[in-house]
Image (cartoon, rainbow, N blue to C red; front, side, top):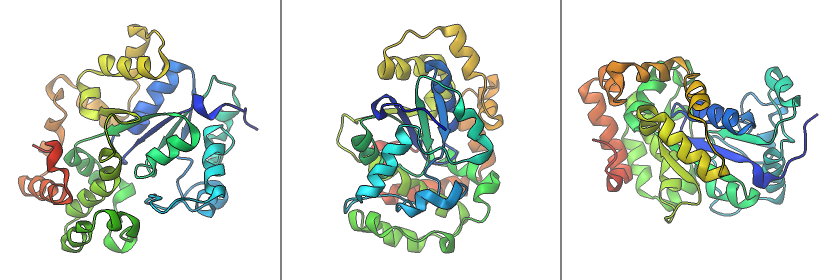
Length: 283
């Protein structure tokens, strides 16, 4: 059982895996009084694999349109009707004021998701070296390989040079950097002003109160109490806490210590070849 909400009241949080989306989703949900729905489009752990039934994949870009049934499924998620993760499901039976949907598989179709639902969106961007460094250490990416991920043809049709880059990568960090590019290029290549709030993970770590207040006040136009926000921001994962130490206020400190210089160079080269040099994000 779940409650019926307007999809326009929902907030979607998107970004690459290991970019801080869970942290952002948890803070927003707590501050606004919403319930967090975690990865409802994931084609792996969800009950009965329902997202896959409607066409969701590991990379979702609907350049050639989408089916009516997929659109209905997205609306159902936004209204709190698709609560699929059994061991967490009991949390969703408690009435709240709405939903924050955190999902890392919707980046390329983020604009479509928001157009379908009329919902608000937050897109979290983290430096590719930070993301790759974290993914290398995380068991969820231990078996990541070219064989485990097909090159998404819809993305290649829009960015033909991606095929050459994909064929040239060989190391683990290069492959992870390439997928960082795949998952970020389309939302960041949308016309500005973006129809969602874009926030850098590095900014959230270095000045969390200021940045979270900006997001919350823009989305919901509510007054944020610094004391309560400081408490919520402190409830972060172990990996994020490392960045909060006084000696590591600059988020680059951690991944520069974890990665070899040649790994950093290869990551930057891959994302630059994919077309990200125009943002000047990587040095």
